[in-house]
Amino acid sequence: MENIIKSWAEVAPRLVAVAAGRSAADVVVRGGKLVNVQSREILDGWEVAIADGRFAYVGPDATHCIGPDTEVIEAAGRYMIPGLCDGHMHIESGMLTPAEFAAAVIPHGTTTMFTDPHEIANVLGLAGVRMMHDEALMQPVNIYTQMPSCAPSAPGLETTGFEISAEDVAEAMAWPGIIGLGEMMNFPGVVNGDPQMLAEMAATMNAGKTVGGHYASPDKGNAFSAYVAGGAADDHEGTAEADAIARVRLGMKSMMRLGSAWYDVESQITAITEKGLDPRNFILCTDDCHSGTLVNDGHMNRVVRHAIDCGCDPLVALQMATINTATHFGLERELGSIAPGRRADLILTSDIRTLPIEHVIARGKTVARDGKITVECPHYDWPESARKTVNMGKVLGDADFEIKAPEGKNAVTAKVIGVVENQAPTEALTADLPVTDGIVEGAGGVCQIALVERHRATGDVVNGFVSGFGYTGDMAIASTVAHDSHHMIVVGTSRADMALAANRLGEVGGGVTVWQNGKELSLVKLPIAGLMSDSPAAEVAATADEMVAAMAACGCTLNNAYMQHSLLALVVIPALRISDLGLVDVTKFEITELFEDTE
View: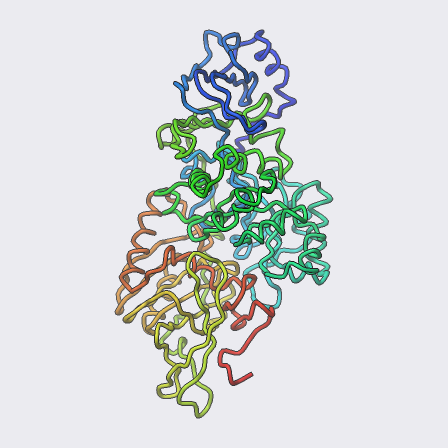
């Protein structure tokens, strides 16, 4: 059942009556300091009255709105700030369904999310997107869905479980919870005038909705202008101050992200704090947060705190997580500020800088107090088709992970994917590797990586090399979360452990598993599309913590290394990736040979 708030037009007569004092409010919050993100000021002693899930009166004295049945909440000198908005994120990255994700972030003050379910789109197509959309609408907070644009993310370089067409995009634009088009990752397609990419963007703009961007290229010349001309309205792929400046100069919104592994706020926020650019054109987001981060560290409250710690004015940081986001999506008259008519999404906090989230109101109802959720987040009835998605085609053995050397070679120079801590891009490295009995072996910190096809039961395995994780001894880690095609990614130092790990995920229907010396150290079960669990966030986070500990036991020292693992097949971010079609040079957008001297 949809948890839909009545429109402003529907409830305007009552809002007017409450604000004028002719009718009593449902809720009044008084005795606090109102943070006005419209004017960027703190208004001490202001009060708010709420009716039918929306703000009616906002001003210095709401006494005239209080009746015998009005719930009065004493702010007791605390700050009243708008509910926080996440401008770009993927729910699937939390390993949780929309319901459980909402339950995890509501106590952190997130009351609005703009989500792109392109992970499930790659596995289940339009049907999977609809399932995510429908569960999102059931929640007590605002979860808007962006229709995924790129499945596959880079046509010709990977094979997905399903493909998204321009017709799918046009159909989805009529769904009630669709706010726009998900990140347009195929930026070479846009720049080169690909008819499907332009048709998807046109369908979105014709519907009056927002096109999400993703421009992961250092080229800020003609190609960048061409990409923006196609319609992309925002971008979260910037990693440096110059990236943020280039985006806002061309009319884009610069989305600065702090996720579980993306630390791109500090390097870009100087565009505001030092260069003095207009902060209205900047938005904070998470992009990808796993369940452990949500449970232990927070969500958008964590991002706002971080921005403040980086020298940003607290009121500017709050604007970038509220009104700026709402305005970007055309919703500034609906949410993002504490003002008459808007959805009554409000947080009480005793400190504007450290942001303890003490009381959360969403749509006029208390949804969390002191870190505990106080409402239910309804679940969608996920069908069997969404729970049986790991189709490997066969049981794998050690031989499936052998990398044969070119004929007659005793050593080879191999191309190696180099993981960069806390960043999405990888490095294109090379390594001289030994050959034993015709098989190339990893050495000197270089591990094997394999992509196991899991959508069409082909039995195919593509092998390569990766470095940067620090693994030692005999081990393997396998995951069916592998952005964006979501085949299975296996990284290891032992082919026997790699086979055991891959087969284990085939057995349980998806997830993440870590093996060492022939024994399983940890297992995170993700039965829905091989991406998500419908168990509570705390339970998933506990198994995820075990996974992180198991990775460390295998020698891994990287911060949030699992996020890096899950992106090794993301063939739209430079420099080197792996797909079911081979090793991909993302600087050239072409398949490349594994060994240097064979091209």
